Every structure is written in C-alpha cells, then in structure tokens.
Length: 318
Image (tube, rainbow, N blue to C red):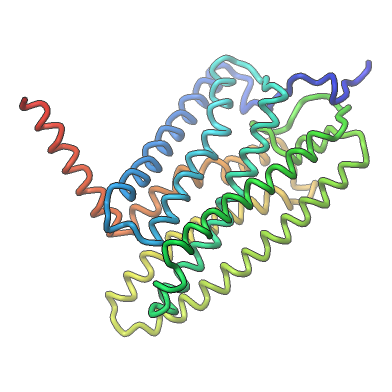
C-alpha cells in the first residue's frame, strides 16, 4: 500500500480523547465549560483594565496583553477539538493544521516573552522603585510588548514554514488533539526534519535564557521583599509577585516537559494530559490566579459590576 506524500495530503487525523460516544459528549461539555470560563475571565480582565484609569500602569498593561494572548491561544485549540467530539470526527484540513501550528507557536511564544517582561516589571518595581517611571515609561512598555508579539510571530512563521515544507510519507494521523510540530515531524520521511529539530533546539535555548532571567529576577525580588519592614508592604509585594510566579511555573514546567521528555516517557494518554496542562489550563486559570491575589483588580471589578448594574437599572426604570 502506497503511503501518501505531503503533496497528496489534504487533511490530518487528530487523536480523539475517547472512542465512546457518551464520553465524547462529556469531553465536549467539559471543554465548553473551560472555554467559556476562559472567555469570561480573560474578557473581564481586559474590560476592567481598559475601563479603570487607575489600572493604566505598566503591570496592568502587561496583564491586559497576557489576557489577549490567553484568549487567542485557547481559541486556537479548543473549538476544533470540541467540534470533533460533538460530530464524532477526527479530521482537520491541511490548511487548518498549518494555521493551528502557526497560532499556537505565535501566541504561546509571545506569552512566554511577555511573562519574562512581567518578571522584569516586578523586579524594577520592588528592587528599583525610584527608577520605575524612567525604566518603564509608557513608550518603553509599548516597545517591550510589541517586541514580545513580534518575537512570537517571527518564531511561529519560521517553524511553521519549515515544518510544512517537509515531505510527509508516514500517513496523516497525529498523536495529539491539536496540530503540534513534534507529532508532524513523526510523519516525515526525510532527513531534512533535522533542520526543524535544530530550530527547536535554538528556541529551547532562548526559552532557557528567559527562564534564567525570570529566576534571577525573582530571587532578587524576594530578597528585597524580605527586607521590607512593613508587614503590609511585604503582603502587597507578595500579592503581586506570587500569582505571576505561579503562572510562570505552570507554563514553563508543562511546556518544557512536552517538548523535552524522552521517547520512553511518551504515550498517547500522557501526551494528551500534558498538552492540556500547557495549552488549556493556563489560559483558563490565569484570570482566577490574578483576580484572587490582586486587591486592586478585585476592587476595580467590583466597581465595574456596580456601575454596570446601575446602568442596567437606569435603562429598565425608563
């Protein structure tokens, strides 16, 4: 039987979570709940920060960008997976697969760069408060955020173009619920896939450099926080740093495990679980983590709700 090459492949087959119809529907409703929670949480953060003038600071500007990236990344993977479960299908088109690879790499790469910038923001705010306005002015913040988005875009463009230029001759079945580069490389029948592996190594090295920067920044931050004489001051510093550190830890640990785990640890069920942890869980829990630990954001959300209710009552009274 002749195996297809990349020129004849018009679609890929994604890995289903289950073949049982009842469990497929359960998977659909579970992912729909997670997706709606992510849309609501991130949308609320974006709306609140844009609405409240008091939150127009560097920290919340970066948090707004993070919420936008989370909305984009979870919208890239979940809707297709939910549709496949609902209609009992595994199919994704060749163009759709390429789009998924591009946007996953673009949005998650930009998010990682943004998390690195956010660690720098916390470092300057706590360790160099007198220079905060100079180092993190409006123009500097816009430039840093633009650099994060641009880095993610160029990285995704390079990886996507290189991956989908490879000849594929080992079928079209992917061992993942969305299109992922390591799964596509398994279908390649050419040694040119080593070129993409080389690009992955470069990306991992850059990611490791960002990770070292984040760790060093937070070591200095916590040393400075412990020297704050006021207990209230220490609590405020920790309340803004700990959510970010929790998000970074979850994002980095699951992402690195996915791309660097040895083949002996690989199995379809493990790959599915870990991919959910790095592509689905962070966008869904980020709003919860930040809103629970941040008093300013909670207060702004409360005021937004009160004003919204007031406007609704005013309209209804007329």
